[in-house]
Length: 131
Image 1 (cartoon, rainbow, N blue to C red):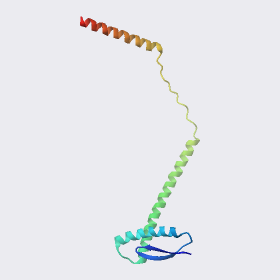
Image 2: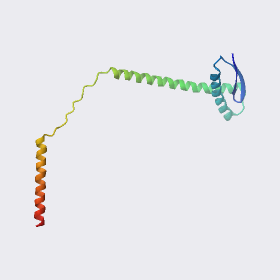
Image 3: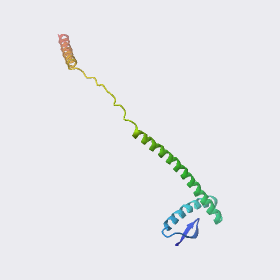
Image 4: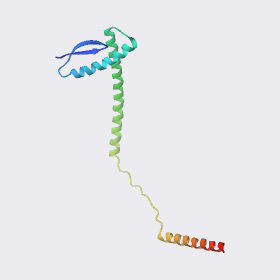
């Protein structure tokens, strides 16, 4: 069983761990050391046992908050999955009928004829106004 030296709160500790778990131990020790550093900055020097207890409690509090959030997110995920499944199993909506008005060619021709007449009248009015 490998012996690993970890540093927490400025103090070295010899800890045994399973083969291959050294990196996980160092990672956990860094997290505990970060909390111990916060305590040390706020409170100052304190006995080793108290520092480790307080740092452990701070980490436990953070872990509990993360576990609560995970529970909330898992519930939201489950609800979203249920809604997706319900939508997948829902019948297809009826196609919506859309009517597009079509202007008959005779209307277009009549409008063109009216426009031509209006232009002719406008030209005649201009000619009379000039004379």
